[in-house]
Image: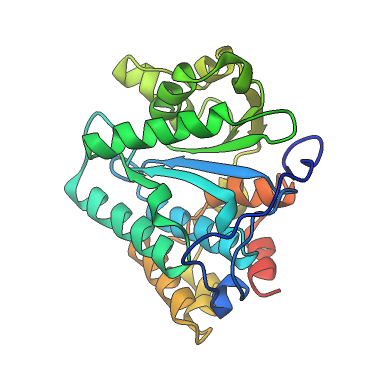
Length: 270
């Protein structure tokens, strides 16, 4: 995959149902891009930081703009499994579920971790995707929340398959990397590495994609595209233009470790 040291070998093409394009998505349906490879995302948004309410739909928009909906094989959200804020759950759920529908993703691959049945189903789905991983068909897991739900799946997966999984994070000793272990006797990023996944730590994305005056993102609101206008509205709820976690998805599909908001703007307008 683009984030890996080598591109994946061709592994077939799969059409994703319900992925008809809109102008914001780059147009056309989505077929699996073997050079990008399979992508999983695990995000919180249901407690503590609210930036995921903007980062999650931005990540979906970034993928959809290149018609990469089929490459997203897993998305669990609200993954702060110990407790939640009702306001946070409501906003994160709206951002993810409506974003998935608007940008043409297969919603059966999305799992709300505040629901025990969906948590179980999501864990099983991620185990399945990990177990499908080989040297020619790697999986990148974007860690946009605490580590615990990913650790649960990785721990249950085939040890040999784990070697072909990238655990993508940003920054060093960040809240997401350490919170589960530090505050809930759970697991941290180093525990994922100990299970055998590949360490992929890119620079802290807050410097280029963190808080900014919302005027920068006016091009979304002024685009005339209802999906981009909706994306702007989700960012406006947060109010600070912070889409830092989406930088990990941008990295996975482009290989750019230090993208800033101008890079994302240029990409979306290309």
